[in-house]
Image (cartoon, rainbow, N blue to C red; front, side, top):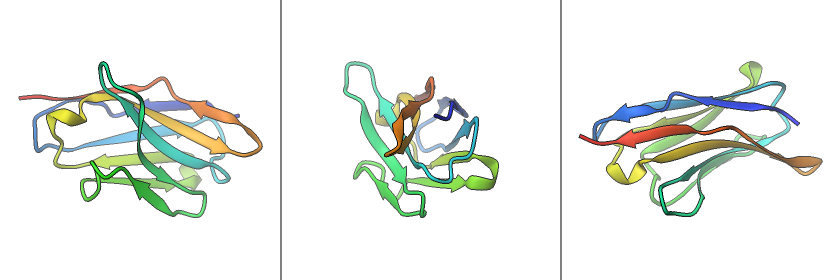
Length: 115
């Protein structure tokens, strides 16, 4: 099972951008990767996912604003977030899944959108 470490969170003004990174301890080529978020008092929700083959999917709330990508050579997954809004404030978690093992999770990175 890979170990995941997120980075790139922070405080940004509404309309701003951030890029989150998720660095894995080993190869991610076989894994489906995802970004989840959890806002205070709310359930964990899937934000974006990318299959091992590169197919992507997004929550309706972030379509057209967020882009997930992966660089298997660097064992890293990214989440480019544009046009950020206060409702995007949450802790963002990286996830790796493969049928042969239990899911792996990172420790999370805080994203705060506020003026």
